[in-house]
Length: 213
Image (cartoon, rainbow, N blue to C red; front, side, top):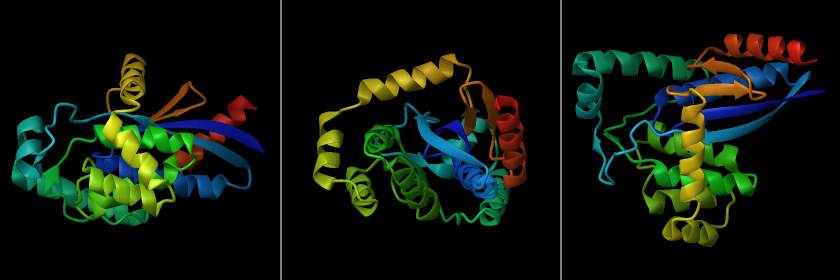
């Protein structure tokens, strides 16, 4: 069985990352009998200067992208539809939050083999339930829910552990040319960008596996 290394560069705050991850996993299910994936989640911050208190979603998106509340509503409706097609349910997201501590905890979860589970829990908490993915109480609850040691997670969050590792990884991916998410890098050299449909991911995975054979 062929194994592909997949780096999923994304941010918890990115709705298309939720769509893209679920679409990629549907594709991986389809190619499962033939291909195996080693999935690694890599950090990227859409809002690196976001204060701890966050910002109103509509106001923030309007200021950042120069679009109207009506355009934002249409975009969100389209994203909800795309999410539903791949099994992800979007809820109301009233605020945008800082996600750096979530990335630190994801880095730590990767060491303990729970990165994928925590990533899903974070995406659901924010995009599905509108919760703050940077709040330590939320992060600790989610860590416990996916089977991680809550006391160890609290120590990671309180100590600032893995700050340098996350910053270095963010910088490395940006220097590699990643400036939008989701970006999916396969075997360190094949790039797929955006929340593509499962069929697109499936075709790309089969094609890359054939090239790598």
